[in-house]
Image (cartoon, rainbow, N blue to C red; front, side, top):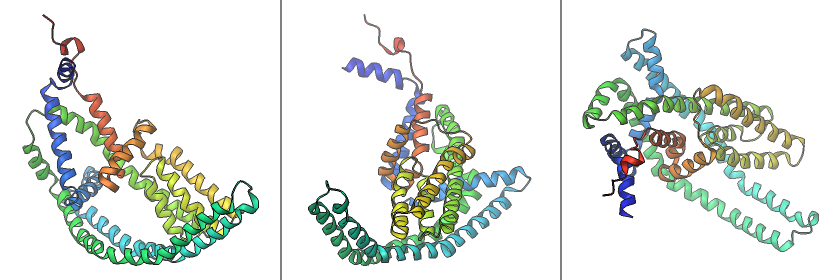
Length: 357
């Protein structure tokens, strides 16, 4: 057994560059895991600054000084945030509140529909339906209490969000303005011999940048098209459902399947079984098909070549570790793991196995 472990270690860790890269990864993951909650605004600001850096570089290529480019991009970003929180968020929160107020009524309609099932299907007994309706009654009875609990417990979260809204724009501005000094300081903390880590980062930088910026535009386009489509169909909670559909593109395969449930339920409670209900689902299916077959290949010039199982596992693992940001960066992190496995130096088996005397 020791011989097998020794051979494995010689094969994968005999190169000092591999050891250095391992230490960097372990330290980085340890910091994020242990201090991730405290550093949430910093990490979020890094992501936003990374997203805006592409626009800054684009302006620099057109002879705009970096400081002026940073100021222009930051002003545009600030205007977008103000519009988002003072234009979109109130409308979205209004629809969420309206949906919560109508939830008991929706549950009552679902209960009445379930009570009719034994009349049409012999294999469904009244006792089964009664058990389900009793559960729905309990849900209806506790809805008001849950809403009150959520409203009371959300006050500290609102205060934290206000603090983040002040800190994050400042952090984003200084990350953009002082990018070179910050990177030089960070590089000074790393070992001098880090060619393998630098090569892996260069490979990931292009893919990560394309992914983040591509996902940003994909959310805007899919959410916007969904809102326009649902508004034309006069579907209730069009903005809320469009926001859910837009955010669902962060989680390939799983997101679209999960968001189908609220879309179908709202359409059913509003239109019932009929042509309007079918049209809503057909339009939603067309949007998802165009997103997967047209929009994604256009936005992602270098599509990440990962198996669907690898994508689903990465979403579950990294989402369980880091929540929303883990889901958002599940594919880039899976791509990082794949790049590490491909770039990792290996010693041939003949050299890794000690010679027998």
